[in-house]
Structures are given as structure tokens and as C-alpha cells.
Length: 436
Image 1 (cartoon, rainbow, N blue to C red):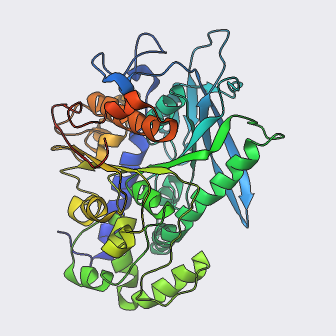
Image 2: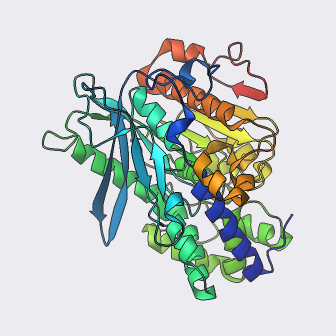
């Protein structure tokens, strides 16, 4: 439990912690040695944690959406007839703020390689980053999914790592906080805008013509990104329980704490602002209409935080697509009792599954670049887990997400069988499912 009264001290600590963890939880090219086509992070990787057969291509994009430039990256099955090494440098865009070494991050893909159209089109996966984060937080999963026959698109949301690092004054911090709060409605809109752009890209005259199957779509995300995936498929915002939460001084998530700090005296005013921003009609203090996109067929919500606090049981009941939840029992950022637990319990999906990492913290979803840790050892506590081997956690994340998306978007019966309770027998993992 953390008091929400001391705004300045708390916000400074939050930004520091977020900035450190978001910077260093990045996939490293050297993490998977040996055959670049068919390995996991560890030699004992489960079946769907082993890299797929497709070479991985990567390219960046930007598209104008109203008065905003939506920027992001695309990972896709590519062609590599010359056997070029799958190696790329991801630019976090903070090299002018911090050491260049923490802005240039290594990945396992080929920049701008030609897509493999012969085996396409491929299902589309939209990936949403965490609060004040960046799109390369779990690029290892993006690369892994592309190697398995998916196209992954990720965009920089309104709340970014760069913005949080630049916020040094009270006024700038207030802007960063409001950007994060506005994400409750802007993030689901980003998903829809990206799907619109994907339809244009894969059209007959598009740069990725015939590559993306926009009739098979999933949304995945970690932390605030996990909450975004839920909102993107119809979880309905509901602020009626927020006044009591703010009055209790309970630390439920970073975003809920920010809301209470900035708006506890006028929550109806905040709701009215968000409704105007979203372009929806409604009255503050009532269940919102859906902000979801009917084109999305399945979701993965990993340690969903932030938006989940603002969704009631009635709001979760509106989610009906197949859903895979992931939970860290010792999550100190997105407290499970206020976030993933109610989402799992009340989501209306007939098909839903919950993977629980016992004794794990919030950071297990990302990867530390060893070079960064060696250069700045103080980063280590922010990019590791006291209990879990990070490589093992990443192999399991790759395995569960890949099997789930293959089962739901490809109708792959073998992948579905890998998600049956009898098959999911991994030390440190608890598992529940209503489908497999």
C-alpha cells in the first residue's frame, strides 16, 4: 500500500523506475546462440518456444491520423535466399537524452527484407507497449511470432518512454501524467487506426500487398498494453468505483495512482474530458459504451494494469473473444487483485485461459541487454526477477502466446492440444482454461 498524497516524490520515483525498466527490458541478439532458425532462449524450450521456420523481416512506418503522426514497427515473415544474418538495431529514440548504448538495441530480424508473399497472407497481431514505454519492450516475442507465420504491428502510444525521460519540471510531469491517463481512450483508437493502415498496406497497391490477413486479427499487450487489448475488444470503462479507490490510498496500479493524484477532486470532470476526447456520448458516473473494434478475433493480456482498474464486472462481461491472460503472482506494479484477477474472473469470453507465473514479478516479460547491465550495473534489479530465470520465462511466454494464436487464428489442432491442462505441466506455472 502506497499513499497517493505525496505527488511530487511519488511521481519522480515512478518515472525513474519506469525509465530504467523500460530501457533495459529489451531483447538482445546474443540471447539465442546456435541455429538462428530453430532455437529457443534455452535448449529446453517448450515446442512453441522454439523459433519458427520463417526468416524475420522488420520495417518501420509512420502514418498521419488526424493531427497526429502514428509511428511504429512491423515484423513479418520474410525472404532470405542469401542466408543473411538476422540482425537489426532497434532505435529507442532516446540517444540524445541518455547514453547511446541504451538507445541502440540489438534484435534478430533483417531490416526491410522482402516479405514472403508465397505463403501469405498471414494473420495480424497488434502489440501494445506498457505505460510510458516503447515498442521494443518485448521485441523477442514480435520476432518469434513473425518466424511462426504472423505479421506483428506495434505503435508508439501517446505515453512514451521519451516523454517520461524529458519530464523534469512539475508542469512537464503533469503533461506526462495526463498523456498516460488519456491513453484510456487514445490507445484503443490507436489499435483501430493501425488496423485501418494494415488494410491499406495489404491492398493491391500497398507496400505489403498480399502479406496481411486482416480477417484474422489478435491484439496483445503487457501491463498497460494488456489493458489496452481488453479495451480494444470491448471492455467498457466504468469510473464508479474509482472515488472509493482514491479515498483508500490503495496502490492498485501506476495509472490509477496517477488518476487519483491529478483528478480525485473532480473525477466527473476527468470522465467528461475523456468522453469528449473519445468522441462518445455519455454521462459521467455510468458504464461507458464500448471502444472496441469488431475486427479483433482474440487477445493476449499479460499482467494487464492501468485500464483494468477502470473496468467493472459489467464492463468485462462485454469481452467475448477468446482471451489468454498471463499473471505474475508477485507483481508489484499491476497488483493482481485489482487488475488481472477481476479481468480473468469477469471477462465474458466462453474461451479463456490463465497462465500464472508463480513467485514472479512484473518485469519477467522483457529482456535485459547484457551489454547494458554490464555498462550500468545499477540497472540489474530493474530488469531481472528474484526467482525466475528470465530466459526460461521468455521461452514460456513465446510458447503460450504462439500456441494460443496458432490455435485461434490458424485453427491449428496440435497447438490447441499443447494448451490442454494435461499438457501444460511446467514447474512454476499454474494454469486454468475453459476451452483447451
